[in-house]
Length: 274
Ligand SMILES: [Zn+2]
Image (cartoon, rainbow, N blue to C red):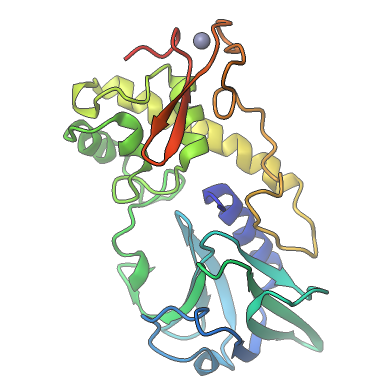
């Protein structure tokens, strides 16, 4: 599943390949490609010019020279591709033009959990993004209030940082890595943590994710905007996630894996005390 970092890479790719282009034609090719909340058909944005690409958590939106935006969520397998050779999984298609140059932007989605939609803006974000909290890289992210929100919750710290209404964009892999870096046990109760400790977790998340964005940013292919979570773009070295029975890089104790919701948590039983 694409995490925030993959979506950020897609955003940067779209900044290069889509901004400044006019949408000459927009076409929906699969019944589930358009979110039911869309206020219009895709064709309704034909003629609009793309001014910017924004992101919050895993949501993307195209700012147009109109009041509406094109919002998008990549779901499990969504991708934006420029002039792809293979269009078997193309769910929506945009013909773009800049001067005499034409290109085709495809929304490709094999598992069809992703979507695009035409939406209005409220409080600076598309309506489908309203309940999603800012992510740690946004200007509107307010770490002080996120810390006190987390400290009010009688839940595990890992559950708290994965909650998209508290802080968005931290997925399972980066949650484990952040908690390892901060030396905090994933099951520690959020309401029993000191501010400085919660702050350390959030700062660690920033550090881990910023590092991964750098790696992703340098390996981005010019012509191929790919967001497949399994593509290995974010080939960062993992210290905890997926490292069961491997020695902790900090202390040498073996990393443990425990069940967490429907997934797993990986942590060092020595460095990460509850
Ligand atoms: Zn350790």
